[in-house]
Image (cartoon, rainbow, N blue to C red; front, side):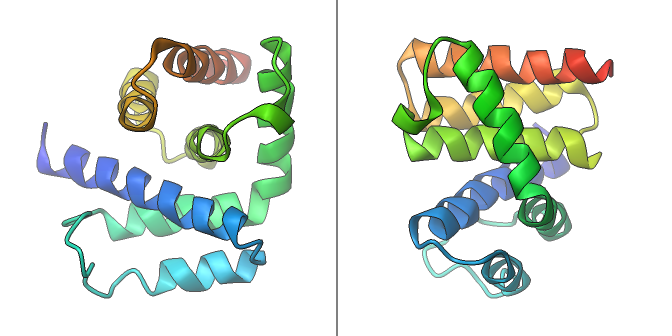
Length: 148
């Protein structure tokens, strides 16, 4: 994995953390933007290492400003799978929303790379197959609907 690919992967993981924290704490959109603007501070735990700060800011800001639309898309696609979004694990919803934000924001370079990256992140949180398969099908569907 190249350094830039690795840094984007770490930025995706950090985006999940920021958006999850925002949802959990029921913070307004501006809180997300402010939190991301402070990501230049060194990570105390060293858990993220050198992530792509610009990628992170663009992804989180797009999610923050388009969150309602992204949530509707996520909910519709999730519900089409025969499940109800209200019963979904919050972190799974955040992963889907962040991935969809990346696709819609224009940050996605190649669909296969983006899907693969989000599947790896999903596996980190959900080692069992059903959530990973759901994320794969959802992102594939979003990309096909956009005719990318």
